[in-house]
Structures are given as structure tokens and as C-alpha cells.
Image (cartoon, rainbow, N blue to C red; front, side, top):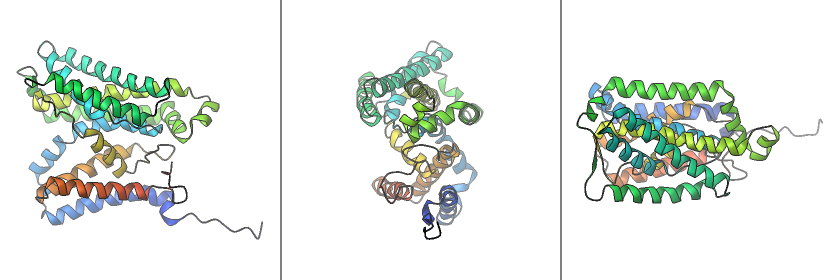
Length: 317
């Protein structure tokens, strides 16, 4: 109708702006620390160190990315990495292939438990994974009470650029292919947009959610292998705060917290690298840990606010 007013989309909520902002933030942080550190952050030695610290986060983000795409949360990843690393290190004394397989299986079992309580018992993913986080952390602490769990004497020999980079890229490429070129990505987005509508569209919501939680755990089991060959042993602090790092990284990459149709696979890589560069830059500038946490908290809050629906207060899907 002629008298009907044309509804204008707020500038910050336009799709092109929301897609550009994570890239703009990444470029801003890169340039900012290039100036503040006088280019030292991007020296060859610093870049190699930065890359070596990114593998575990990149791999772990993949599983949580899938969980968040369908509107869930997983705060058990840090503890899961710890227990899977215990399994990998312990069994590496017998056979490295067996160690990797059992680490993956351990993560899958924990992920399946998360999915079971979320899907079958109707307990929200936030509560389930928080409970498992503390439970598994206690098991890790018990397993490492007297002494760290040491891996085989040659386990750190696998900690090479070729192994780490190939392993990480392979996981990212496989996950991207599955998410982008199979029906899984669309099913996860449909569930994130609305479970009821997804059911009417023919999506087997419960089965999909349980499989995704199990898959997320298995991917963390793979990350545990990289973590184990890096340090060669496991202590009670293994994986501490990893779940927080994953959440901040994904949000920095432009990931909508409630998932849905606007999720992009590049959120993983862009967010993880933005987070790692930000942390590395703060460390190089001599910022003390408590101030780093304050800065990261502010950044996280700002990013969540940017991707929030102004009318409902909910995160835009």
C-alpha cells in the first residue's frame, strides 16, 4: 500500500555489515599490534610460535562450531581435552595409533553423554556441559594427583610443523567439505533456527544432535593428540579455560551464539587467529594476565552486543 511505511533495516544489522565486521576486526588487530610491537609480533620466530599455539584451538573450535550452529553450547571441551590427553599419553607407551584411537573414542563417549542428557533427558546443553566440565576435571585431577601422566619417550618427536599443520588442515578441510557440501550443514542451521520448524521440514533433530555432540567430542580427542605431542605429558591443568577460549574465538569470528542460518565456516579460522594474535600481542606488550582477562572480557561483551537483536535482546540467528 502507498501509505505503508517502508521498514528500514538498522545499519548494524545489515547482512553485509555483519559479514564485514569480523574481517575488519581481524585487520584492525593485525595492524594495531604491528604498530605497537614495531613489527616484532610478525617476525618469523613469533609467527612460528603463534602458529604452534593455534593448532589445538583451531581443531577444538570445529566441534563446538557444529554444536553452536544447532543452537547448543559445550563448556566441557577443556576438561574433555584433559581426559583425552591422559588417555593418549598413557596408551602411547604401548602404541601411538591405539593411543589416538582411544583418545578419539573417549571424547566421543563424553560427547555422546552430553547429547544423551540434552536430547533424551531434556536438560539444556549449558547445564549438562557445565556439570560434565567439573566432573571430568575432577577425574583429570585424580589421575594426575601424584605425578603427571607421561607419554612415550618419543612422543614429542611427532611435534613437527609438518605433522601439526597437515593434521590441522586435514581436519579443517574434511569438516568444511562435510558442512558445506552435504546436508549436515543445512540440517544444523535449520535446528539452530528452530527445532520445531526443522522437524516439520523432515530433519531428525534428536538423532542429529546426539551425533553432533559425539562428533564434537571425537574432534576434541584429535586435538588431544596435538596437545600430547606438544608437551609429552599431562597435568591437572591440561585444557584449563579452553572452553572460554573457544567461545571467545568463535564470537570474534562473527559466530552467532544461538547458531542458525547466518553461521559461516570461516568463523572458525578467522576467530581463532584473531584471538591468538590478540593474546600474543598483549603478552608481547607486557600486559599482565589479570589485565588481559579484563580486555578479553570487554572485547567479548562488545562482540556479543554487536551481534544482538536490538528489539528482543536475543542473539540474531
